[in-house]
Image (cartoon, rainbow, N blue to C red; front, side):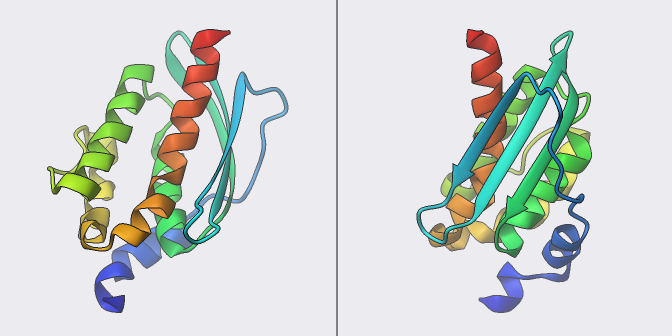
Length: 143
């Protein structure tokens, strides 16, 4: 289990996580916590013309939560609202239903998270960043 869950790719992605930061004036902010392990993700996000123009986060999570957050943080600027909602659903389907890895060239690194599908207790921490991003998008849409 350990070698599958904590592969060198996942550990490298976790290590490449951008430094914790917060935006001065985000359009939306969201915090998500895993009830299973206590991992936490705080996200700030702003849009311009329907795409992410600014993003910052603070993550206090296990390596799996850090890896998924790292991949998202390094690729999210320029992503459209529709792309991000689809990304959440595709990632959830990959983990829970054994579906294909998320589509789109910017998200190819998420394929390294596919082995987590066999460990349901790890899904919540892996999904935190996706849930926080979509919470922000919901806030902006309802403003």
